[in-house]
Amino acid sequence: MPLLVGLTRHELVLPAGFSPATTAFEAQCSIVELRELKDLHSRQTDFCTATFRGNWLFEIVRLRASLVLICLIGLTQLARAALIAYEPFDYAAGELLLGKTNGFGFTNAWRPAGFNARVPEGFELRPGRLQFANLATHGTTRVAAEGVRKEYSEIYGIGRCVVTNFGISGTTFYLSYLCRVDKEGEYTSVIIGNGDGRELSIGKSGTANDYVIAQRGGIGRIGAGIGQSVGKTVFIVVKMEFRDGMDRFTMFVNPKPGSPEPGKGIVKEDLDLEPTNMIILYSRGAWSVDELRLGTTWADVTPTM
Image (cartoon, rainbow, N blue to C red; front, top):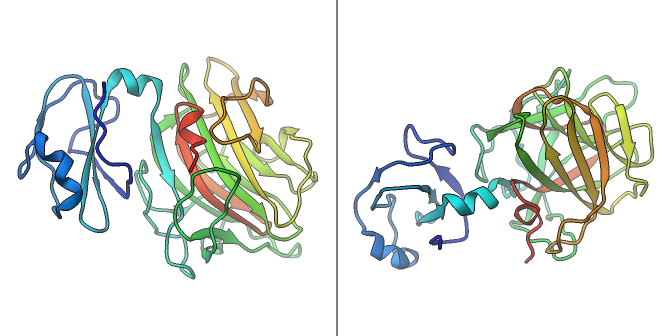
């Protein structure tokens, strides 16, 4: 049975030379012994300590209050499930998303990204988190962008790299997020890609009154058939199955958090995604985004409160 100590993560810190692909390692720290981990919640410290040997992964998580929690996960468990990255967009209202580093499972801060995108400053933190049914949420803010007027050519784009790679044959990932159209307007998308080439686009279409999954630029677009309503929060989950040749992407719109993975979704099988590790917010329409998750199972990205 895996040992799990602590549930809240703020800043992921991995030991030098360690990667999620490691299958066996030895890590040595000081200050507390493994038997003392249960008492970590009642003390303040900046380092975790213990010696681990064998087939274990470990993550050191430093919280704002200087609490350190250790999560030990058996590799057999990791093969079945792992929340790889999480961005709750929990920052001070009024600040720009550019340069922010909250959440875990990322290799860098939010930075300019996206094909022909020139305005990363368009994404701003605003009060009031998005909520959907019984989905677990965190914080009090969301990220939002205003729409671009049609007479202007600007595209808002900002991205962040995760600690894993998309596009590797034989791998499967699940991505989920909350979004809301705040005004009638053009497209509002989450992109999996490098900002060029063959990229996956998920979100509201700029020409069809619907949520769609497509290659960026609208190639091979498939709609969800639900339309779109201004001011209504939508929960989107995408299953990404990478294969030799064309990959398989399945989009689920407004699934019930905590329920098993539905047997049917909106399937796209005509895109061979180029290898990447970047998630991009990309838009010309007015929208809000919150609760971005990446995992290896359906349950990872649809947690309940």
